[in-house]
Length: 290
Ligand code: SAM
Image (tube, rainbow, N blue to C red; front, side, top):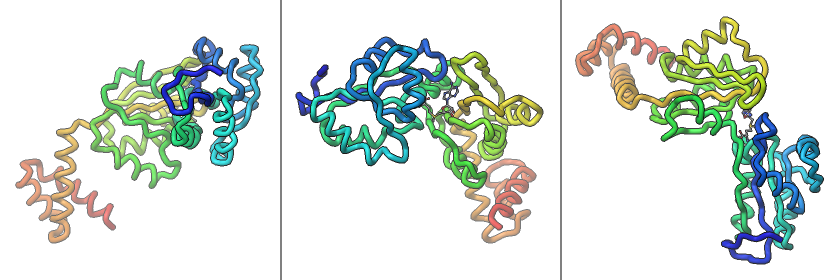
C-alpha cells in the first residue's frame, strides 16, 4: 500500500483522482498510467470505455462503475475499501474527473471521512482551451453546460453579464449555434469569443471573433454539428456594464411613473446620453416587463 501521509488514518489506502486524455492518448502522463496499473480498483464513469483505454496500455486493473446515477450508492463500499488499505483510482470518460463529470460526492465523502485523496493531474478541455484562446486567464468562471432551454439559458447568461472574468462553457454540438445567438443577445454581440472544437484531436479547429460574428458564421454554414466544443467569452468591461446596469435601473424606476418617451427624456438628461438610445432601451424594458 503506497502512502503519502498527511491525513489521519495512516493505514488507509489513497483515492487517486486521475486525469485521462481528452482525445490524444499520448497526453496520458506516466504517473496516470502507473497509478491506474497499481491501484486495487478503478471507479470509472463508463467501465466499457475505460476498459478499452486501459487495454491500449496493457493494464487490467479491476473496474467498478461510478456515474451520476449510482455514485451515492457506491460510496460506502469504496470507503470500506480505502479503510481496509486498498488504493483506489477515480477516472471519468475523458479529462479530469469532477469537471462536468462525476466524482464530487465521492471526493467529499472521502475527505469527510478523513481519508487521503490525491490528484494525478493532466488533460482538461477547460484548461486546454484557456491555454490557447488568448483571452484573459487571470480570472475566469467555468459554468459547465448551459441549460438546454432558451429561457433558462438566457437567464443563466444574464447572471454572468456583469462579471469581469472570462466565461467558459462546455457545449454539445447541436446547441452551439443557439448558445452563440443567445450569448450575443444577452451579453452583447461585440464581446470577444473563442470556440474550440476537438481539442488535441485530428480535426481540431479554433474560431475567434465577436459573439455576433461567430453566431453569424454558424448561421451561414460553419460546421458545428459534430465534435466536442469549448466556448470562451471575454468578461464584462466593468465600466461599460456598470453604465448599462445603471441606465436600466433608472429606466425601470422611471417607467413605473412615466410613459417610455418621458422616461427616456429624463434618463437621457440624468445620464448625459442620447435620448434615442435610452428610448430604445426603455421600449425593450417595457416590452420585457409585459
Ligand atoms: N472532465 C472533462 C474535462 O476535464 O474536460 C469534461 C467532461 S464533459 C462531460 C465533456 C465536455 O467537455 C464535452 O461535451 C465538451 O464540451 C468538452 N470537451 C471534452 N473533450 C473535448 C475536446 N477534446 N475538445 C473540446 N471540448 C472537449
